[in-house]
Image (cartoon, rainbow, N blue to C red; front, side, top):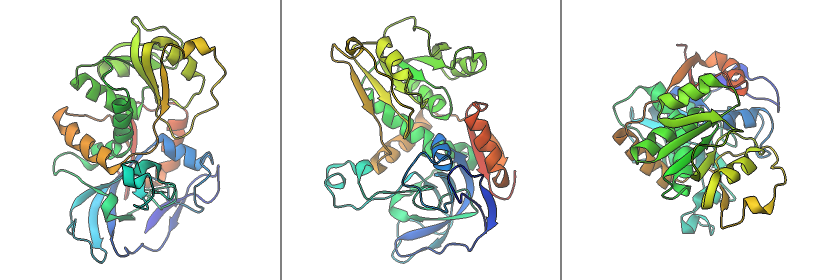
Length: 330
């Protein structure tokens, strides 16, 4: 099969013919029909995550169909459409797994990072960590839900009942979570790179009632803010924008250093929290909610062999919405 392989940190991906993987007990082999490109993939490729195996096939927003069932798999049948997310395996018995925090399992394995992922024609996954997908919706349109949607949803839950919600960095995750927030009756304020009028218009199209630069003050005090942009300097700005008792949620797996800031920005019971990975419960809840909104994803499709081009477009901030790779061409 063809796979896009990362051999070393900072290297370009290489198209390579590799043996088709075979599922072990409890696993499924999935023929990949679409794999969205996530900012975490950039962190994998750029060497910013220490746990990445080498070589590795990136990609963790995978939609495909079950091609082979491993021994003892009864949850799926051949031909079922499934989604494969970032969280690929947990130990099941540590203190985190036993208390509903499997996303913090210290032995966890991650798709496209410590497990080969979906920048390929086939991928193997633990059947327990795959999600059944509905019959409706195009494969490419569903792919961004598997991380941009899931992590965005977990960030939104961490905001509590915040009615005035700020979103810093308006890309794949933001354009999904903004739709969910509007569905829930929240008001969305979008923050983009200063002067990025195209991104601001994109945010307004997806329900933002106001859009401006990251260094602009919002027209109203926020109840909570989510940071999708991996820029530590945004943390003090977001803290300044929220009300006393408000929450700032950092949604990325990697962020540049947070600069020092006056304690007064955090005082009066403001909270600064991070979101790490996802749980299967998050996936089940979000994938049940998405059709009710209904969530519509803006995507740009690339053939699998153009993965490097898609990553470069994402790195340069030239995508609105999500890039999606299609094995076998477009």
